[in-house]
Image (cartoon, rainbow, N blue to C red; front, side, top):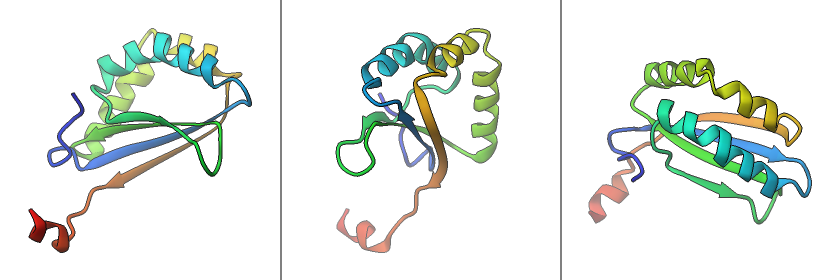
Amino acid sequence: MPPDLARYPLVDHRVYTIALRRMNEFIEVFDRLAMPVLLETLGQPLGFHVSQVGPLNQFVHLWAYESLAEYERRSALRDSHPAFPAYLQASAQLIVAQENRLIRRIELPSLKQRA
């Protein structure tokens, strides 16, 4: 079950651009090699998506955090995990570019009135 966004207002929004016609291969490598490490170190993701319109061949994943300190702590656990280098090596020729944004949820007064 994805994290409760009220408790985890900081979202790590990652966009990986995958080599042309290699998305299925990347997803297989990511699921097999990265996901066990990510679930152990980052917890449950908010979700995974692929682009359909606009820039294509993009794999998007979202992870929620309570704070910047928690993001840094969990990211360090991921990066130092002994199984993580296998994923990095297997995906090196599949990922063309990476973008990473930390975005913070905000409350809009107009939405509170509708609840």
